Each structure stands twice: as structure tokens, then as C-alpha cells.
Amino acid sequence: MVAMKGVMPQTTPFFVAGVRLVPAGVFVLLFCLLTGRSQPRTLLAWLWIALFGLVDAALFQGFLAEGLVRTGAGLGSVMIDSQPLAVAVLSLLLFGEKIGFWGWLGLGIGVFGISLIGFPNEWIVALLHPTNENLGLSMLANIPGEFTDIKAVIVNLFDRGLWLMLLAALSMAVGTVISRFVSRHVDPVVATGWHMILGGLPLFLLSGTLETQQWQRLDLSSWMALSYATIFGSAIAYGLFFYFASRGSLTSLSSLTFLTPVFALLFGNLFLSEMLQPHQWLGVSLTLVSIYLVNQRDRLGKWLQLKSADVASSKLDLDN
Image 1 (cartoon, rainbow, N blue to C red):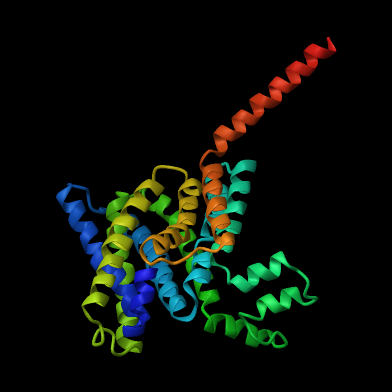
Image 2: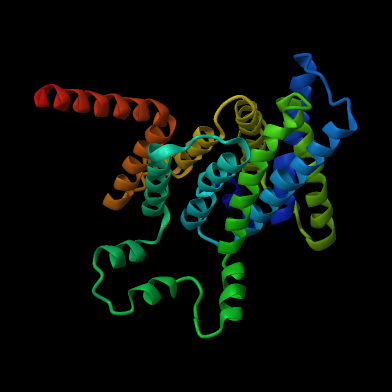
């Protein structure tokens, strides 16, 4: 996100989204060719890949790129990284994936943690010092403007990128779930490469139709930023993410995306001398706690059951 946000003033969103996907897909397929991974062989496999590419590549990257133009990186990151909640609900409904008390608690703490990291400082101050009678309106007024016209509110939210980032988060969540079905018909890494190419081509088409001056203003540093976003942010990250998504718990894997704003803050502090506010440090701590709770939810549940059984046994011994 940082690399994409930095080059947006010199280029256009659909072009950036396409660059993130198509070259990355080629890199992933070259890796698959070198490692001898089998290509899709059935029409059903190609149909799943096409759906995967539409939702997780075209829609996700398109909404993300357009949203980054209109919203701040912090608030945008919070919107994007709320997607583990959607993944958890979908995994529960479609795959019967057990979430449990500790899992839901961890997801809730994670959303609260990334909210502390990304929300504007004035929102945090208003929450900690709720003395204003119009607390809710004063906080929300920073986003939509006038609240007397619902249509104007919705349009304003789109203009400011918040709905676009939310749609990007939902697209990513649905794409993560679709990847489980795709992996039943084709190697998940091969599917990742093809879905980036099939999803990226429509974005290039939109760019060629609707945008101008896509690359004329890009300098060497901008091309390096785009290359980083393509190779590390797409080819490697996508390949690894969907490889593990085909094998493990979708809820546990998605909860790791809570770390995105954490890494952004920490690297900004280390390399750019950006100072973290106390509430942001609290958000980082809560985010780490949430990931532990989600990923260890089964073990914590068993531990609680054993403790309850021990307490009940001790009470029974005392009664006897």
C-alpha cells in the first residue's frame, strides 16, 4: 500500500492495479513451470480460476487502487484489514470452520487494535474524552460532511474512498474463500498465477479506455516502487497466501493480515523516524494479542475445559 500510494500522483489507479497483477502472474507461472507444477486441464478448473480472477484480482485490486486515491493510508488500511471478520463468517457458513469464543474474541480485539492504529487522532481523543453532546456526529463529520441527505452521504463516502476500501476488503474475503474451491481442481500456486493474469487484463483495458498519462510521468524511483509492489506485494505474497489458504484454517490465515498496519507503523518508525502515538502502541499490542488468540483458539478452548473439569473435580472432592 505504501509503494502504491507513493506513485499514485504520477500515474493512474487502474494502470497501477494492472501492473501489480499481470507481470506478477507471469512470474508465478514461470516459477510453476520451473518446478513442474501441472496446469489446469478441465473446463471446470478454468471456470473457477476465472471467477477467482474476477473477484480476488480485478475487483479487489480495482477497488483498492481507486480507494487509495481517495482515502488516507491509515483509515484505508483499517477498512482493508477488517476482512478477517468476513472470512471467519464465510468459513463458518461454508466449511463449518470452528471459530469459538477465543476466535471471535481475537477477531474483535484485532479490529479494535487496527482501529486504534489507523483512525484519525481526533476520533481517538473524542472516544477517550466523550464530553461532546454530539460525539457521534462530530466524529463521523470528518468523513461524510452533511448528514441531512442520505444520498449525499453515500456519494461522499464513495468520493472519499471508504466504501471502495470496504468493497476491496469484501472482495478479498470472498476471494480467499473461493481459493479453497479452486484448489480442489488445480494446483493453488498455478491458479494464483492465472487468476492474476485473467484479473489484471480487464484492469489494463479499463486503464486504456478511461485513463491517460499512465506511465509518461513515472521516474526511476516510481518504477522501482511498482516493481516492489508487483514482485513482493503480489507475486510472492499472493503465491504464499493462497498456497497456505488451500491447506490450513482460512480464519487463522486471514487474521495475519491484521499485521499489515503494524508492519507499516514499525517500519515507518525505524526507517522514516515516524513517531507512534501511545494509542497506536496500544493498537499494536492488541493486534498481536488478537492474532495469538485466533491462531491458538483450539488450544485455549481445551485448556479452559481442562481447568473447568479440574475445578469441578476439586469441588466434588470437597463436598465428599
